[in-house]
Amino acid sequence: MKKRSIFFRLMIGYVVVLALATGVSVYAILQLGQMRDVTHSIILVDNPFLDLHNKLSDDLLSETRYDKKYTILRDKALHDNFLAARAQFEEHLDEAARIADTAEMRAVILRVLGFHRFYQALFSEEAGYILSGKKYDVARFNDEKEKAVDALMGELMQVRVLSQQSIFGKVHELNRAGVRAINVAMVTTAAALIIGVILSLIITASITKPLAVMKRKTAEISSGIYEADLILASPPEIAALGESFNLMCEKLKAVDKMKSDFYALMSHELRTPLTSIKEGTNLFLEGQVGEVTEKQKKILSILAEESNRLIDLVNSLLDIARLEAGMVAYSFSKADLNLLVMRAVKEVTPLAEAKRITVEKDLHVLPRVPLDAERFLQALRNLIGNALKFTPRGGTVTIATSPVENGVAISVADTGPGIPPEHAAVIFDKYRQAVVAGSQKLQGTGLGLAIVKHIVQDHGGKVWVESEVGRGSIFTMVLPVSSPLPEPVAAHS
Image (cartoon, rainbow, N blue to C red; front, side):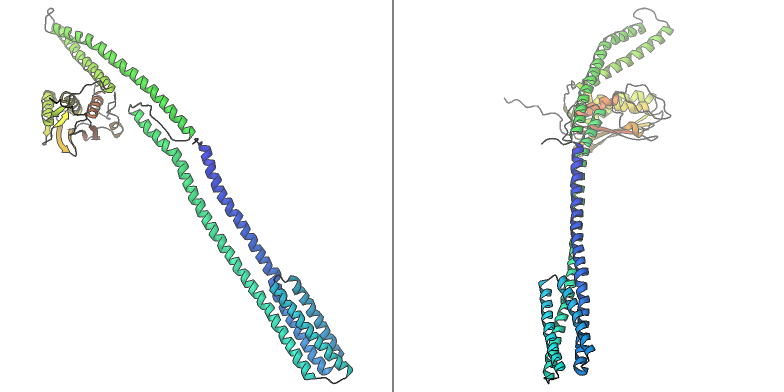
């Protein structure tokens, strides 16, 4: 699948959300249009029908009133008033027929028209009898006219009922349309919100996940791991940045190798002349090349001391170069860790006594651990030497061992100045030393703890420091009880 850019992904998300919002708007407009049509129908049809029902009822009552008065008084003015009321009734009935919008309403109006014409015919026939002076059956005419008027009033009431039912139905329709609009709006809004959140999470994850991987890779680079193994399933912009990271790692790895090779070469080349200088200085101090004055002895002692320091530095450089290159051959065998601790303590006892530092041991029964005794002693010496170097006169250094889950722990605690938090995370890096405010900077290469870290990791363990400024530090190493290397296969006879 082709990689999509961040811009494309964001636009897709915006278009989807905009499409949902547009759909809601279109639906709302359609519903509003339907509600407008229903409202217009109520205003222009149903309400006028109710008004016409009242007018037709009044007109019919006027007709019946003038009819009764005319048949009794036989006044021509009353006859004319009846005809005027009839004309008004017919006019209102024509208007009702024009605005009738249902077949049922039109049928009712036709029935009203029929009954009204029948009533008019009865009135005209009776009026003819009255004008001619002939006798006629008054009771029959009154009965038939009363039936016609009752039928008319019933049909007019049906007009009112139909109008009210139409209004009631249309109001219900408006209510249903409103409920539908609200439900659709709520559902669509919820869908838009959910889809928007999901799209946001997907788009954000497609950006933040590779950035998190790059962040971890940056931490690896800062700790000296320069493997160009950054593979990102990400948008093209971030993928290109990942390729740049890999290129940077390759170049950093090459530079680091050049640096390590340079240190290893220089260390190897320096060790021989330094050894010669040391041995020559010792020959002078021992008087084997002639008599040496006291002043010369002092100078030669300084030269010997500095030669030893330079040789230690060169050895440390060689050790770290070989450890980083994986060129150190370990010889693992089961060993008693407490014996190694006591041996290391015995070696540093003269230095501790010279500084009046108390060295305490807190040793517990431990299982035998697979390790390279000489290499692990080197790491132990470095930790104890560091503790003695940073502990003031009269202080205490405590070496403790204890069993832990699937391993053993060795800790070296001092009562020195402690390590600031910002330095605790980097003191195991090469050439890094903790600096405590108010304390004198001690001489060192910054390689001792880096060597400890490599040796412990090569044993399958881990090392860390816990410290508080002014309260001292505790360096802890944990080694597994199982061998970090495959066990050798025994030969069968």
